[in-house]
Every structure is written in C-alpha cells, then in structure tokens.
Amino acid sequence: MEAKTVTPDAISKIITNPSPDSSVDLPDLVVQVIDLKAVGNRFMFTASDGKQKLKGILQSGFSDMVTSGSIQNLGLIRILDYTLNDIPNKPEKYLLVTKCESVSPALEAEIKAEVKTEDCGVILKPKQEADVKAEVKKEDTGIVLKPKQEMVTKSAAQIIYEQRGNAAPAARMSMTRRVHPLASLNPYQGTWTIKVRVTSKGDLRSYSNAKGEGIVFNVELTDEDGTQIQATMFKEAAKKFHDIFQMGKVYYISKGTLKVANKRFNPVPNDYEMTLNENSIVEEVSSEGVYIPETVFNFVPIDQLGLHVNGKDLVDVIGVVQNVSPTMSIRRKINNEMIPKRDITIADESKKTVVVSLWNDHATTLGQELLDMADKSPVVAIKSVKVGDFQGVSLSAISKSVIKINPDLPESNRLRSWYDSEGREASLASVGAGMSPSPVSGGRSMYTDRVSISHITSNPSLGEDKPAFFNIKAYISLIRPDQAMCYRACKTCNKKVTEAIGSGYWCEACQKNDEECNLRYIMNAKISDASGEAWVSTFNDQAQRILGCPADEFDKLKQEGEENAYQTKLKEATWAPHTFRVSVAPTEYMNEKRQRITVKVVAPLDFAAETSYLLGEISKLKASQ
Image (cartoon, rainbow, N blue to C red; front, side, top):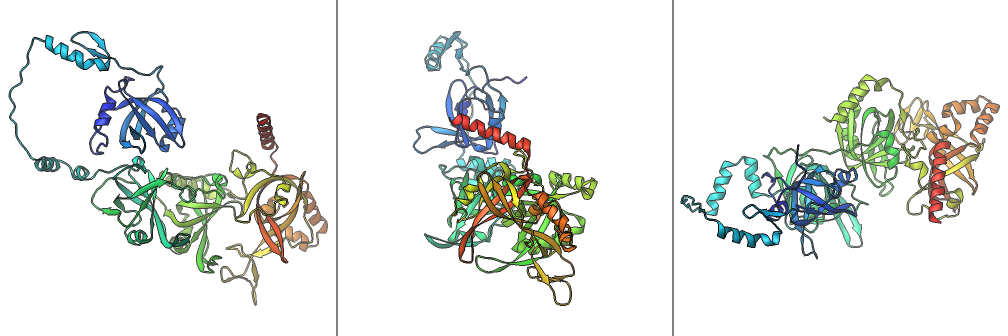
C-alpha cells in the first residue's frame, strides 16, 4: 500500500531544479496542499513537505480536479512537471504546477516533520540540527577512510560531447533546447521555447481602426499534452509567417509574448493568448517523432446546441452527412461581393439534425468532396463553428474552422456503428424544430432573459446595434385569416422562387430552374400577456408548431374552399400558452421606425417546468427582501 506522506525535502529539490528538463525523470515529489483557494479562474495554494513551504499556482486546467475533490486542501499531490517562476512585485518565487496527480484526499492535519539525529537520540528542530551535528561528529571515535580517487580533468565541451554521444536523438535535441509545455507559460516568464502543431489556421485579413490600417491572421497551436493556445500576428509579422505556418505541421516557436486572452475574440480554452512579431523565431520540426495531436475536438451533441445559440463561444460538432446542397452564390452586405456557400445537414445519435453552412473554399473544395460521396453517408467532424438562431438552431463554418471527413476518432467510429445499425432507418428531426422549453435540456433559450411584452414595446431602442434576444411567456391572441401565410420556396435553399417562363420555378439564389417547389410558412400573429400585446413574425418551423400542420396541407384547406376547416385551424391555435424565444431589431416602413419582433423558437408551455421556474423566482424575491 502506498504511504500517504510527503517526500522528504521535496521543496528543496524543487528550488534546486527550478526548470527541470522534460527529458530527465523527475524525482518523486509528493507535497501537501495547504490554503487552497480560488483566485479568478485559477487556484492558489501553498506546497509543503513538512519542513519547508512554497507558494504555488494551479491553472484553470486543474479546475475539474479541484471541483471533483481529487485535489483538496490538506490533501497530497504528486508533482509531475512544474516551473519555478518570478512574479513581478513579489519577493518570493511561485511554483507553477503544469502536471500533477492526486495521491490522497484531505488528511486530518497539516504534516509537520521533526528532524531526528540517530547518534544522540534527541528530537531537534531544523534550526538546531547543524549545531548538534557538529557536536556529534566530535564524539565519533571511528574514522572511515576512502581510497584515493584519481582525478581526471575534462573540459565542459568534452563532458557535453560525451553526454550527447550516449543519448538518443530526441534526448540530444532536448539537451540543447528546453521545451516548455504550453500550460507553463505566463506573461511574466522570460525566454521560452514551445513545440506545437498548427491545428487551425485563419485567413490573412485586413483591418482598420483608430490606430490605422493593417493585416492580421491567427493560428491555433497544440502541444503534446493537448493544451491549446491562439497566436496572433499583425502587419509585417503576418506577412512573414502566413506562408510559413502550414496546417498540421510541427514547429519550435520562441521570442513571442503572452497576455490575458480576450474571450470576446478568442474562443481557445486558454487563460492566455500569444502574439508573434517579426523578431519571433518559428522553426519547422521535421525529424522528431514526438506525438502531438493534430486536432483536439470537444464535441457538443446536436441536441445540446440550443444552449449555445448566439453565444460567444465556438463549438465542435460531429455527425453523419444526410444531405449536401449544390453551391450557391450569396451577396455579402458589407462589400456587395458574391461568395460561394453550400449547406450540409448532419445527424448524430440524439436523432437530431442540424444544417451547417460552408463558405468560400470550404464550400467549393471540401463541400464538393462531400457532395461526391453523399450517397455513402460520410461522418464529418467540424471544429470551431458558430451557432446561430436561423430556423431555431443553425451552424456556420468560419475561415479557421477545421473539417475532417471520416476522421480516425473513437467518436467517429461509434457514430458510424450507430448509423449503420439503426440510425439509417431512424426517424430524424431538426434540432431547431424540436427544441424543448425544459431548463435542463437544449433550451437555454426558454428560461433565461425572461421579460414581459411591455418591456420590449416600451423600449424602441432595443436591438439598434445588434438584435436583442428575449424569452416571453404569452398567448397567441390573433392570426389574421386574410394574410398570405405561405410562399413558394426553392427545394434546395428555401428562398422564394418565381414561376419560370414555360414551366417550373426559377430560384434567383441558386440560379436554376426546378420543376417543383415547396410551400413554406411566413405568418404574422399577435401575442398577448398581462402587460400588453405585440405583433410578431414567424417562419416555417415555428408557424408549423403553432398551427399543427405543414404549410402545403394548411394551404390546401384554403384553396379547396374549406373555409370552416381553415377558420377552425386558426381558432385552435389561439389562446393557448406558449414560451417564445424572440429577436428584436428596429426596422423602417413608409419612413416610420418600427420594432421587428421575430419568433426564433416556440414551444407549448411545460407547466411543470414553468412551475419550477416561478418557484425559483419567488425564492429570489424572498432572498432579496
């Protein structure tokens, strides 16, 4: 059974070796964690070996170990890698732990070692030990002599040459180049060298701000521990390194700087981000076989994407391709430029589907490859996509998104097995159409940002900079029966089509003629709650949930003169409670400014979930009084 105690003199061993070489095995370093506390997204603690103490830092990557109880105050940890750093304005050094494992949960008390000398049998404090050792030596009567050893003088160059000659190639490299793990880097560190793989590369793009104009691009880097960091280059550095950095290749990088990551623009899970300038050193690694993962994925199941709608973070997804659209040209509002776009629909084991929009090269290259093999239902993994609210939930790739077709991953193999055994014949539904209002499922949408209708209608400035999103619990009080509730839509892109000369329907977006088209809803409805009422716009999926039937079936009632059945459908849809996720933005009609309120998600009221929500709100009110 492993002894649950600290390593004697562990702190001294750390202090004498402040930056251990990764190629050399560290001695066993077990310390006790004292005064563990959270500071921001990190954890401060004191490492103790019973005799000496050293202040330490656990980065945010250890938060799971702390919150799960693996690392506890008064518990023991084994330090597997570390760096001893100077912190500005602090007199002492700090132990930055980059890798460790739990040895023991919390002990009953702090370990305090006592120093004992065997010659005199007296228990001493560390301060007295040196004096007593001197006295004990005087009383010793035996003298032990060692044979004279021949001294051979060697130069430092000779010693290094012999050590390199006996070492393996990777070890010889590590003797001349100290490689730091990404987890050990911080803004206060001096010189460092990292060994990383480029796992994502963005496009070279232009910018203009108060400081002037320039170009910028960034890459995501991953080391052998799977730690990631984003590196950004501006102006001359961007020109210099854009062609040097290649996807999937491994590099040594040094002479960069670090700063606290701006999570508004940097979704990479690291507390810091790196900046490289024209003096930074980037050297490709071509001959070493150290394993560094190519792309690290953190997949979000499709049925959980609702939690990330219009969020700041990018997500990773994996799914079986169900449909691939032809390439279409879309005009950008910013510069009126035409860019290629292609939509793919993917599904996973949750039996939900989602549409992913690919743009530019992703649409024309990888998108075409997917179209060519669509009949084989390939598995596609996509890193770093935006989650939008089009049709409830939609995904959009960006320039630095990484797309892998049939990747060699456990998740891919499991998904392929599921699809071949049952998924191919399963009934699949769009995640946007099937979003649940439950607070614990895919709908962050339905129970956060809850407001009344009057909150929206009394604030005409809402959504001026960008659309504002809210949740409402309301009743549908009126659906005008005389409105045009459906439109003819392209079967590929769902955009409006017009009757073509001769026969068929022309789609301006796809630039093609098709013999058939779909009918889709576009419906206005009035919603009401205790505070007021407002008109909202609903589109196909949301209107279908409200009316309870597809657009072609509903239109047939009207066209065939089934006036009573048509009116009954509308009547059945009113005065039933719903929860709505809406976007609010200003618009202008006939030189008059108005609010445009669009329903993004709608679901019948879940009375049990609503009761839980209201009880929670009552508890908050009581606590605030």
